[in-house]
Length: 202
Image (tube, rainbow, N blue to C red; front, side, top):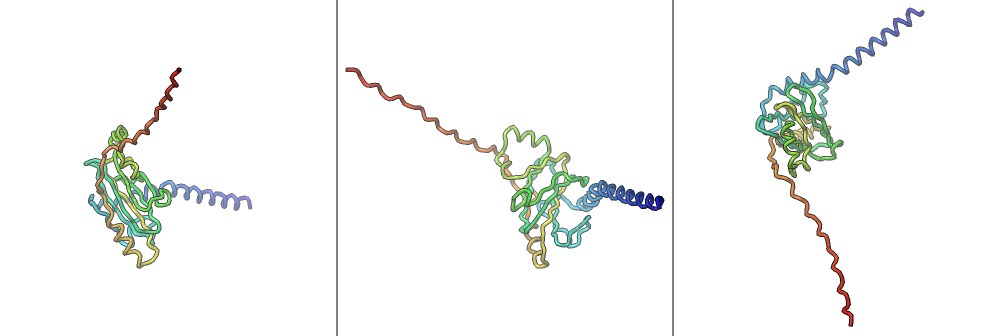
């Protein structure tokens, strides 16, 4: 009987170890598969809509997937999109498929996606004279020059997939931006009290 319990305990322990190992290895495996798919895309100014059954780990059939491939070789890049969906999420990956940043409409409170992707040196330079743009975007620091943004937008009904896909496809992977410094806030005028005139002694 003791031997049977020992065998069962070892079996459970082995299953737990395998499960933990799978969880720890999954991010790299998923990132590698995703990166392989994204490397086939060329950097463009528009989002590419993936097929309804994309070759992605844990692909959800109720989601529309859009990909923006970018390069920072010419400087920072602004990525904007309006998924027009009840829920959307976005993940920024480097060219090796490592997740750099993730967000969704719930965590940011934003109705649309607006990312400013830049390398560390560019961000340091902006800190010296912060542009007004930084108040409007989500800044993501990139270590390398290339990567991609993967957006998932919820389309629960078949008839809504076309609408969501068309809206996402109007996103801009190279949106215009200005790095003009934010205007200085006007300083409040300080009223200087004027002394009342002293009465003239008779």
